[in-house]
Length: 318
Length: 318
Image 1: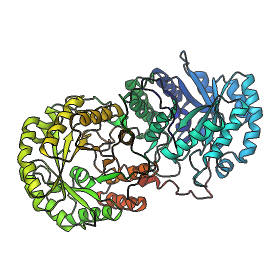
Image 2: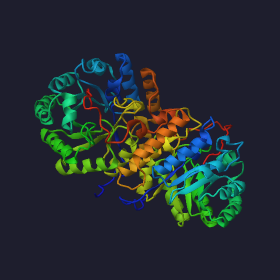
Image 3: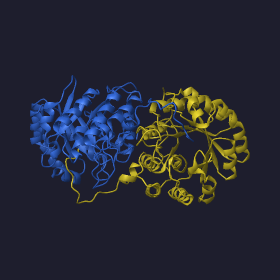
Image 4: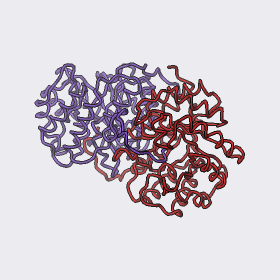
């Protein structure tokens, strides 16, 4: 498979922070609305400009995000901010538009089994129902990012053919989405599957921007970002502190960690617009709020040039 | 900076397992010799053929590895096995050669401060003393891998110029080393520093194979492997289960994890010769022996195509 043009060094990479949505939704204890707002504002203060703030889903299904409207009303929106929300259906789209989001992330799974379990309908029914969703959002002037869950594999079906992902991407393009976000829902993305999905989508739906949403469940999330960069992709989702466990595997982590991604990109010669120290501060705040250690590594170790105590001894390092 | 030729897909990548040395040396509680042997044998059974089994250092400095000779005498050595040990000085080299290792890993730091703290002498004195070390090892028919610690940055001095690393590599080449191992002692390697070091060494010492030894302290260890692969490097150190904490930062991890690396390489189209399931079994055994959770992610989440319970419910995944 030939490589595409890599993202040139010095380029701006867009990071979309999804912790307030993909992270908080997995927390069992309700996080007070004011504290959610505090986290989002700390993320904006760190320089992030794309934040997926919440979901407009059934409060019965996800009680944690029942305060979607209140959180959106309470946050700062600095210049250039893109505030988005996930919506599963028309009702969610209407509520999101009323709440004044800039963008909406819709969701359908690339695998039938996962889509039935997640939204209780076949894939093609989800896609048909998107017509009314898109119409509503277009009228409201809301930008649409077409989300494809289990894009790199399904924990029930196994491998997901890249053509299946590309077919959904094409539908999204025909519906008028500007971008498609490939969701690595349970951490099955690998360099080969990432490359295959990107190539298949570029063939089938060349008008779409591709956004990549990796989980670090098997430790290779940032390695998959390297593949994305080599393939010319400039937009990545990540979660503050690596917030967002995988509900299926004890101890396994969820989304790739925003401050680790910022660190990697800066130290690879890319621009992110994010201040790493402030990003670490936002992760510390988030960790304090959820009340348990988050998996982010830069949060624990500190920035690269943080010095050790000069009196420290060293033994048998290699 | 131009990219070198990337390693072609389908190539064999060599993984050198360093857990029994770089990992065990950080364990406070003495691990019985028989259990160390059990781990090494499980690693060979998984298909690994390069294992850094121990160090010949002062037993006062590293009591955990005082049984170096006994471990080496007790392990299986399957066909094609390369058994190596770290040695800091002539006495260590003599003991390693007597114990029948195939290869020795010498160590000098790229930064003066770290070398003084680690082996209590200036860098140039270390290099001069290597003359007798190399002579002894050459006579004994032992292969030499020239280790350079703090090759991507020093926790006391900060950035380490690539030229400083290349100068030491050149001395290693002149002494007769076949390869140089760049040690990311405290997890400061990044794509840019990795690329700079590789290019500087190829200019200064084109006869040397380059081996990369990354720590995952800041979460980017496997991303640095991707950079190494893009630059044509085919040899990586890693540690079973990610064994080997960083003694400087609570919760921070040490070496990149062998089974996560095997998973990444296999899923990038490379050959490793390692059976992932057996590798996970070796990591489970190691975890049981050290008696605490290891940071390896594939160990927690399982292989990529491990299926979930078909009855499992899913909520609001994106």
